[in-house]
Image 1 (cartoon, helix red, strand yellow):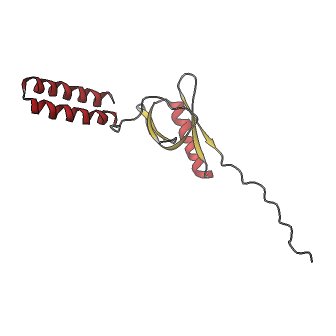
Image 2: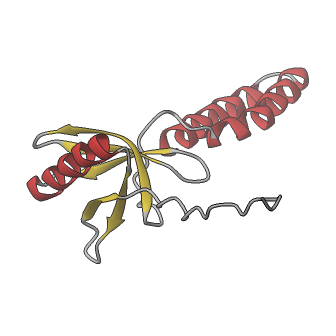
Image 3: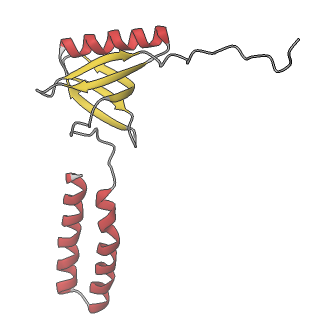
Length: 140
């Protein structure tokens, strides 16, 4: 978001200089364009979120780049793409949880530790409630 705000500020400064040295018509047109462009600065640019989510979160997908980062798509009110620092322990934990979840048809949950390190665990699906046999409606 910093890049989009910087771009918006550069546009405002350029528009201000044109408005100062230009005509009144140009000043009004540039002020309108600047006002219209302000909400565009809040649009995501496709970068991974740098803040850590409120956990536990369900992992929808993941990619492990050794010695670079762990990329995870986390579910929530709105799915978000997160870049986590790489560590061998976190990568092994994520990979084993993903493998186990794939075999059992369950999901993977992520929990952040107190030091900010991610922990991954397989979450078993909720068991089906016990079904009781229905009593016959007619007596025989």
